[in-house]
Image 1 (cartoon, rainbow, N blue to C red):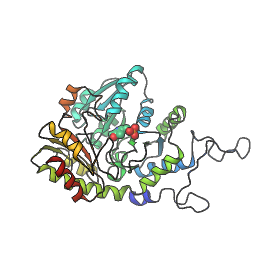
Image 2: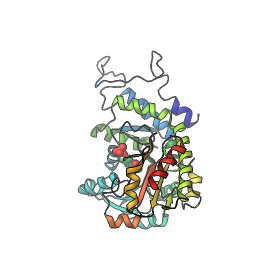
Image 3: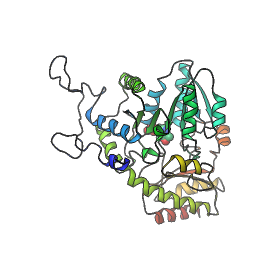
Length: 376
Ligand SMILES: *Cc1c(COP(=O)(O)O)cnc(C)c1O
């Protein structure tokens, strides 16, 4: 079955009384039928039926063997980092999500993880960063907020040749548009707060692992650390995932129109959208993704315009996050990438004129009218 069909049918048929919507198993613990016997569920940190439907569902959508649900995207990423030991070296995308960067620089640095940040859209740069103690490559594609595109299959080849674990943060596209495991990655991680949840109403993280041996280790860590997603949030996330395809179709179409409109606007200097044929990642995206996503970043001509745009948009809310049905606008240099030093930000292009738009499902004419007023 297609991804869309599987997404819509998450949880259908689970309930023995025939409920179409999977029940919220709001319980901490489970009765044992007899000594030494279990229903398959013992305690909700170790496993919960509502969470299980979600975990099996995301595994199926990403094409992995097992899924894991966490209290946030950061909890999911932290759990993955615990697979490594002091002295291990890892390679990360340089324009990484700010929270992941902070976790590495201010938390995991205490435990002796060595990290190199490289432009993962440049395979030679990735190869040049390899060391004897390199254990993994972790990348985002497209990146946040500059939408740089990396070749997943080529990176998987490089990682495979060296026996490295290859992890892809697939938050920006979701399995509806991109399936890194099918392209050779070992692990996919999501901030499900974004497209998978899709309604700006919950915080959640997901991990999908391709092979059982690694899944055992991830499960051990999920249960040992305990940053699991609760039953009610699991249920909300299942409900969100059901409409993933239809939301993304509309969001991408809106994004395509807005990106084209922005390129012609006199107060916009530069537009970053991988669906524009002049974008350097356009060809790779065509090869490895089913679409270009719905994040559009753009640079205005003057710094003063940033404040004006953020304060004047009515329909588009000035807020962090992305991926929901409501359009949001963010100022990455201050909101999401404040943890990254200014000189590094400038070099990467995350300057004080850059804005990031997460395009929602509103009528595109209304979004354009809002942007026109804000920019004029
Ligand atoms: C938001 C985000 C995260 C962190 O997820 P939370 O759910 O906010 O903890 C990680 N990676 C990317 C690419 C994100 O956009």
